[in-house]
Image (cartoon, rainbow, N blue to C red; front, side):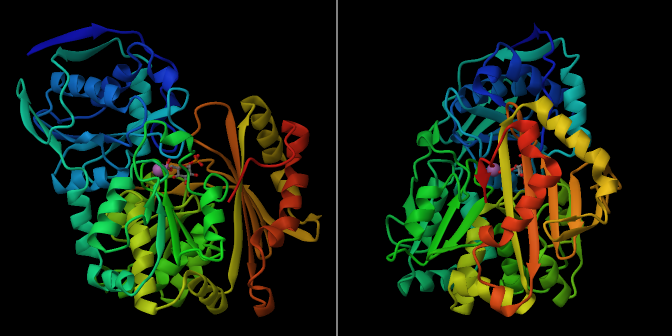
Length: 542
Ligand code: VG1
Ligand code: CO
């Protein structure tokens, strides 16, 4: 095996965002771009020689090319074993599971998750630790710093590996193992859930439609829902992973999965509609003519979690990201569990999950997970819903309405303004920040501001701090939260998160967007977003 060093020049833009490095495919295709980042990653890790690395991606355009290159660099850097999903495919949760199951040093996941794919779309790369958890900030900072000064990487001369052939081969002293990407994950789900109960549900005629959005989860879903659990053939739609996701934007929400929402709004809609994102860590739950907000989904799972045998007696506590509406807090209070509010991004849940401070956590962006993995897990969350429906005999709508009646309803919505001019967005937020203290006591559209500030976080387990994680404007029973996205590949995306709590029984079942309109007006007035950015309305409303 001929190992060689390649001289290279650093790129100045290899900074990790909310979830790894995400750029346009054209950026990743620049000579040495991917290689620089991967070597910067390895240079930031210690003691991996002879150990195992898991590699897989969501199958998007450039996936295979990237994997072949990573194989060469990993072999040259002396990893002992590479475990790769067949055809280079692994969903994020399946990769996380494989890392832990095979006691790997870590894993590289190639995905830009919910961002569009294809030659003109996005590509991404993220690293998971031995716990199958997203790289912590300390590590991603190290990688970015290294990428700014890197002047060479290691590679080797070897023919491309046939990623389609399950089995093992040697490259120098490194074993390269191609594995079935689905079997281990499906087996783990069978350990967690009572599959017999879910099988009975389908056998009794329960109808589900699962939209894999031409992304990574199709084969997982077909195997688990149709083959193992007996949902009828055709339950899974858009089930073949395509490099450009068939032109779909693989983000399951009311905007990007509009057709699916329309299907669920028909008179003959199935009982449950579910969808996942590009890399399979997000999910959306719809009932007949009914949308479940991610914050309510988290609360409903919290309400019933201890009826899943795997979790019995282990539902220690819950966490949500700060922008996520606090419906779960009321469930936790009733069950005497602690609640943690973290910054956006799954990495902030890892320490809480690992230390068993929490059993369940979630974000408003359609991600939920538990200590079964240190990543969010779309299919797992959908299985939670199937379990709850089988256990209670209630419909999706009934479960939501029951939650609202019991605890009050927390109306919520996230509105994103995509592709803003970064400078304009910065000026707007800087101005807002200066005005924050003066807003207290002011009344806008009938809402009086009670408190404002920046969200700061100190990890209760590791003590690590995260600063400036969002702008908070609080009112009695209402809140506006704002932050810039960290997953985009160009310009700036502003996310505004709205929430209002309602306990009046006659006002529990209103249209969320109508209900929140007055609060949305307040945000427009306070931010003067139209004046600063020229935008009249958001691009994505969920
Ligand atoms: C978004 C979501 C965040 C999520 C992140 C990664 O980040 O808001 O909740 O953890 O995507 O999800 P941002 O910085 O764009 O708001 V995924 O499915 O891309 O791994
Ligand atoms: Co994702």
